[in-house]
Length: 78
Image 1 (cartoon, rainbow, N blue to C red):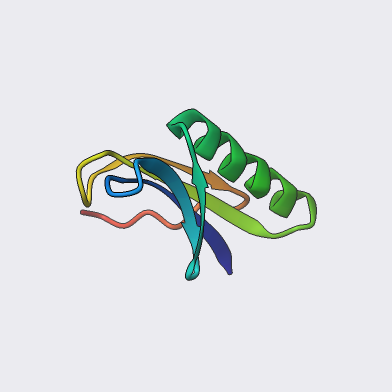
Image 2 (cartoon, rainbow, N blue to C red; image 1 turned 90 degrees about the vertical axis):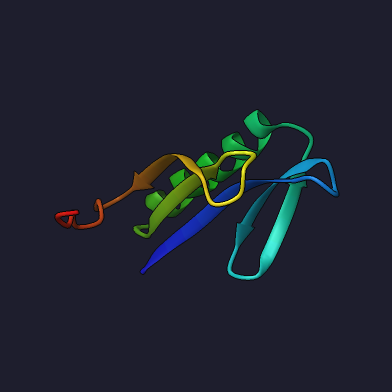
């Protein structure tokens, strides 16, 4: 099973958050939030687990970038 971290901006808190399975961690900048999530995925990969970072834009439901660590998800025709 893959652990997925979402990096999103929260307007009312004026912060970037990394969320995963119901918990979140706040950061001052997007760069710090992404760095933390990527580092965590590298740690997971080191112990043989799969990880993924999904970076959302400031507009809701817009995915800017996605990184996978470990086996890539299967691609489907779209």
